Structure formats: structure tokens, C-alpha cells
Image (cartoon, rainbow, N blue to C red):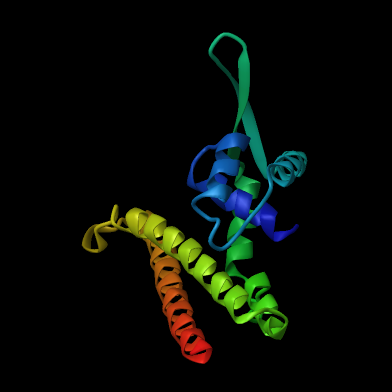
Length: 180
């Protein structure tokens, strides 16, 4: 099985979900550390049903809209727990297009380079605000055990974005000095 399959098992283990719900979660809650397209999610759901790791019930919403609500089977729970118990792989090499382009920045004018950093700063700041808003919904002293992972990942994402923003701001200062 691929990692996306395990991610889907884990999300369905947290709560019974539709394919639409899963797509929203991948676009929002887990987007900082894992991504999946809607087509990938639905393909994996079919495979997981065929492997008897998840099951679904069809619910009628409104007058004619059918939706499938997925839940984990005992076999699916066992598979998820076995995967979670495995040793962690070596740290992956990130693929960051911004940094790759920066590596070749001698091909950009100082103004273009500065604009790239300014635009990246704005994007990082917007994402940071979004994550801080989510983080503020938690009270660290009363985080429930089942929410601890969510809280810690969100806290890590905020810390990482704050660090990235500092680097971007320092880089802009450096570039401004070079232009003088």
C-alpha cells in the first residue's frame, strides 16, 4: 500500500467520512504535510474497499443525492496500527521550487529577486495567519489526548512558518543592502 492509503485509513479512523470530506481535509487540515488530489482519493477509496480495509454505507441526502460514508473495518484498523508502529524512514529531501529557483537566481535582476522574496513573504504570512487562527482554537492546558497530534502538528507548522518568515525578512534586508 502507498502512504496515501494509510493517510486515508488514519483520517477515517478519526471519524466516518465521505470522499468529499476527505478531499476537504487534504486541502485544509493536512495540507501542510500531505497532499492528495480528489481523483487520487477516490481511486484509493475503491482500492481500500476492495481490500476490505474500509466499508461504506450509502446515505440519501435531500431527495436524491446519495453519499457514501466510509468507516474502518477491524482489518483496516489492524493495518493502520501496524503501519504506525513501523520505524520512520530517513528524513526526506524536500522539493521546494522557490529554493530551487533561488539557487539559479544569478539569472534574475536584483528587482526580480526582491519581488520573488516579497511575494513569498506575503504567501507565507497569509498561511501563518491561517494556522495561528486554528492554533488559537486550542487551549494547550486542556488539549484532549485524541487532539494532541493535531495540536502538535499545527504548532510545528506555525513554528516552521515563523522561521521561514524570519529567513525571508532577513533575506530581503540582505538584498536591500546589496542594491545600495
